[in-house]
Amino acid sequence: MKINFKKPTNEKEILFVSVDSKNKDEVVKENGVKTLYLKSDEEMNLRKLFLLVRKMIQMAKGVKAEKVSFDFNDFKFKNINLTDIELGEIIGTQLDFANYEFVEYKTPTKEGFPFVKEIYISGVNSEIEKAILKGNVIADEVNKTRTLSNMPGGDMTPEILSKKAKEAVKGLPVKVVVLGEKEMQKQNMQAILSVGRGSEEESKFIILEYFGGNKKEKPIVLVGKGVTFDTGGINLKPSNSLLGMNMDMSGGAAVIHTIALVAKMKLKKNVIGLIPSVENMASGKSYRPGDVIRSMSGKTIEVLNTDAEGRVILADALTYSQKYKPEIVIDIATLTGAACVSLGERASAIFTTDDDLSKKMEKIAEETGDYIWRLPLWEEYENEIKGSLGDWTNIQNKNSGYGGAIYAAVFLYQFIKGHKWAHLDIAPRMTAMQGENLASGALGTSVRLLYKFIEEYKA
Ligand code: BES
Ligand code: MN
Ligand code: ZN
Image (tube, rainbow, N blue to C red):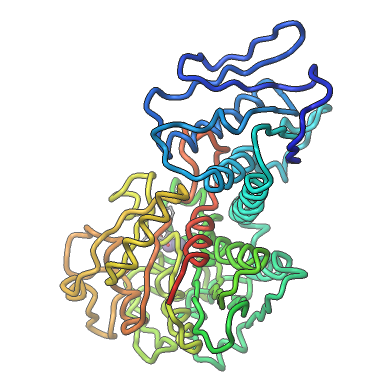
């Protein structure tokens, strides 16, 4: 959408917005001029502010208004402590975030799709304008993440994801290297190769390198799960669990577009993105339950369930990350249904042994709307993933199956111990919930969180 900071000319074409807690969320036409009387809460907070800005866009789309005009000051609330710059960035982000819909495969009607095309914002100065436009750029990358995730599995293979990674950073100072199966063999990345073996599609390992900081500065490494379709493999998922598994590369998509955003914003930081990408398919070539894989690290993985594939490919990616002598490693993955059992669909899970890091991330999560909640990563949990044939089993082997998100995290921990590291299980936030005033489908979670984290990071 185009954002204007001047008064609109043709009043008849515009949907004017007025915000007040006494309003009733209605569009009224007076003397040919349309106004949306948007209802704010008596008790506003940041979470409600996100929803409010998005509701404005949803309602505008609902009445097919292509041009919307509002006053910046209408979104200032006494309970919400934000600078004008912070508020500008938030509004700029939420506007475009709410205007998104995945229409790539839909035939438009004669009038086209009901997107808001232009926004007029009054009550701003040049600093606020800049912040709003920055928010817009952030939302743009979030929405591109959503589009990658939303792509049907047949049209999103490891090869296509690699191409999309290159496209995402085209013209930016980001180097993209894609390892194919041959190159991965040379690197002993048997964990990734094993999971991808059942598929006709070649597995890929996507590397994005952005050196915007001092050359001597250790990089921040982001690792994203890039399973382009997760059938479960030989431990085939039941029918009702297969739909949506085209989005199992959401972590990888978030990494791609976080790095694109970091480069666009010219951050003076060194950031690396690593995306192991495979299709987890059931076939005569698939890896089997009971297989023991020697991972790149040398540690062996005893496969008790081929559907716990994300952690297996991430094991090699976490090992590979250490080539960079990283300052910090963060992995992002739609890793477990168990994370959804723990938290519902309102927060991703964060795991780390670093209390300060966790607090920092939790704070930024709250500020950006990429909500997270911490779960334990205690040594005791290792007892249930000690293997009998191999070093570590890819699911818990001694209890009744509770705590799956934690066992996945504790498994990953084995491959990155000794490094500053956090794991985000974003399965709960893979798709938008009803009432979030967002299009259904992929949410593009973690891009805002990771971007802000990198922006604010001090070694
Ligand atoms: N990709 C899934 C996790 C998932 C489930 C993400 C639902 C988003 C929504 C993952 O690979 C998986 O299959 N996990 C299994 C692990 C189990 C076999 C131990 C799960 O959570 O059921
Ligand atoms: Mn799986
Ligand atoms: Zn998966």
